[in-house]
Length: 447
Ligand SMILES: Cc1cc2nc3c(=O)[nH]c(=O)nc-3n(C[C@H](O)[C@H](O)[C@H](O)COP(=O)(O)OP(=O)(O)OC[C@H]3O[C@@H](n4cnc5c(N)ncnc54)[C@H](O)[C@@H]3O)c2cc1C
Image (cartoon, rainbow, N blue to C red; front, side, top):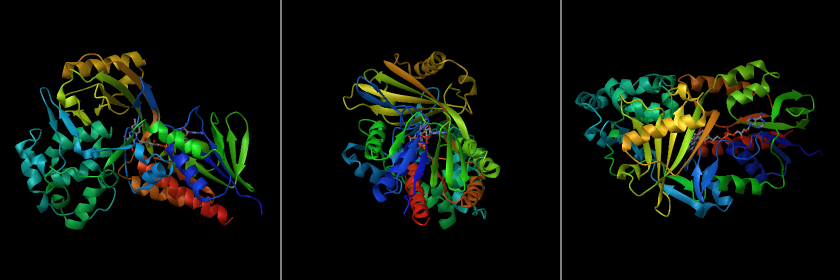
C-alpha cells in the first residue's frame, strides 16, 4: 500500500498545531512549508535583558481546552501564568482621569456614562427580542438593546480601540456571542450581563507563557522533528491534479501531496488558489483583514502612576484623538522593576501612520503617552508591522463562511485552517487546527 501524504502550508500557530495533531495521532508523512525564516507567524517574542516581550499576542484564553492540551503535551503546563479575564480590565482615558469600564451591573455607577445612557440601560429588559438570527452588526445589536448613548459613550470607543474596526462593520454574533445568546434564551441581557455585580471577575481565565509564546512555538517545532520542516519555502500556487495536489514553490520547485492544509490568512489562501478555482479564491478574498502595527515598550516601574501598573486595555474617551487605537497594559515583570506596555495602531483609524518610518511612528506614540500621563521615556521600544494579521468578521460573515465551507467541501483533500474561519484568538486557531487535522486524516485514511 502506498503511504498517503499531507502538506501543510503556513508555519504559524495554526499550521504547527495541525502538524502536532497529525504527529500525535497518525503515521502519515507530513511536509510543513513556511514562507518566512522563522516559525510562529504573527506570534513573535523579543527579549530585552532576558525579559520576554510579545510583539503580537500576550495571552490566550483556555477556549475549548485544545490550547491547554497542546501546552500540557509539550510539557509547558507549569510555564503557564494565569491572568484575570479579558473583560476585567478596560479603561476609558478622559482628560483628567482613567475610568474603568465594567461590563456588568457596576457600569451603572460609572462616571463615564451619562444619566440618559444609564436610564436607557435600565429599560433593557422591556425591549422586545429580535427575530433576526444573523447579519446584525455589533452597533445595531448594542443600539437596539442598550441604546445609542451607551454605544456612543462607552461601547463604540472600546470596540474601535480594542477590535480596531467600526462597530457597524462587525458581526454581533461573532464578537458578542454571550450577549446574543442571552437575548435568545432570556429575552434580555439583564440576567447574563447586568445583574452581575462586577465585584467577582467574570469570564474565561487567560494565560501567558512565562518565558514567552516563542517557547510554545519552539517546543511544538521540536516535537515535529520526524517531519519534513521547510523554512524559506513560499508556495505560490496550489492546484488539483489527477494524482493529488500540486504545490508550486516561489523558487520554481514543486511538491505533490494527497491532501493539503492551507494554514494562513484567507487573502493569501485566495492568491494561492486563484489559478485553480476563481470562485473559491473570490470567496476567500471577501474575508477582510486590515493592517496593524504594534509598538512594544518597557518603562521603569518606579515613578509610573499607579493606573499604568496594572493590566488591561486603555482607549481614548470620546473627543480624544490618539495616533494609536489602544494601549495594552501588561503589568510588572516578575522582578517588579519593569512595566511592559503595547500600543496598537490600526490600519482603519490611523491610516496616516503607516507610510511613516518606524522612528516617526514611535515618536508620535510616545509623545501622546508622555503628554497623557507625564511619564519619562521608555528604556526600550520595538515596532512591528502586520499586513494581513487580524480578520474583521463583518455582519454578513456567517453567510459568507457558510458559502465558503460549502465550496471547500467540493474540493476533496483541500482543507483551510487559520484565523479567518471562525475565531482569531490563539485558542480558536489551535482548536480549529486540531479539527481540520482530524478531517484531513479521515480523508487520507479513506483514500
Ligand atoms: C497584533 C496582534 C495581537 C494579537 N493579540 C492576541 C491575543 O492577545 N490573544 C490571542 O489569543 N490572539 C491574539 N492575536 C491573534 C492571534 O495571534 C492570531 O490570530 C494567530 O496567531 C494566527 O495564527 P495563524 O497560524 O492562523 O496565522 P499566522 O500567524 O499569520 O501564520 C501564517 C503563516 O503562514 C505563512 N505563509 C503565508 N503565506 C504563505 C505561503 N504562500 N507559503 C508558505 N507560507 C506562507 C506566514 O509566513 C505565516 O508564518 C493577535 C494578533 C495580532 C496580529
